[in-house]
Image 1 (cartoon, rainbow, N blue to C red):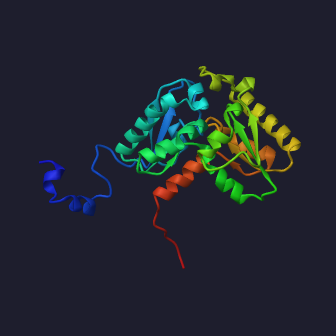
Image 2 (image 1 turned 180 degrees about the vertical axis):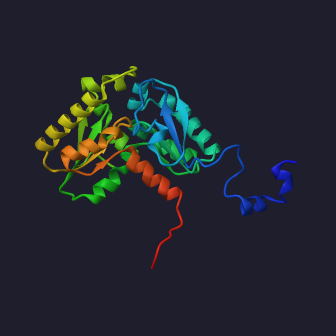
Length: 253
């Protein structure tokens, strides 16, 4: 007998279960990831060991440049991936590239769980948190593709933003174009040098946001050389997880 036959009504189902019964459970966060083949280090959004909780991935297959540009022809594939994750029982959906921001509103309308497709979703919060006399630096894999149109999709504008394109770094080339190996230490050093120069040239910068899902492995080093708060995909995903999976507190009073 199926589980439907053992329950008298749909009300019974929701009395005894918080979600529909499925063949697996426990994946609170679902991640849409573009099929790109290169090493994914711990800290990378596409490396599951990054998280102290289970995550569930759903692959989409198109050229990354189409995502950077917000090509509307890939919208349906992204929505289908989100619906697939929702059907698997995730409580929230994120993306594994900052330029999923182009489709933030489309996906949020298409599913019934919270959607945070891009690290750029944090910008309104960061702007609120730092003085309005301060700027926020964005390290972007494709700086030319960050403008008013995509920022409007995540509820903000170019005001107070300094976009630093790191996609032109030779050390980043393997990630940008999907090669099978790269020099991790050289990339870290190149990113830190770029940040050092940036904060020296723009002393009003009060926080840094890493747009790219490949950059969180270097967040600590970037913070050390800048002395600034550094936000990335993982600061967002941690927040999202704790919003959708609250815990019971224990202690003394």
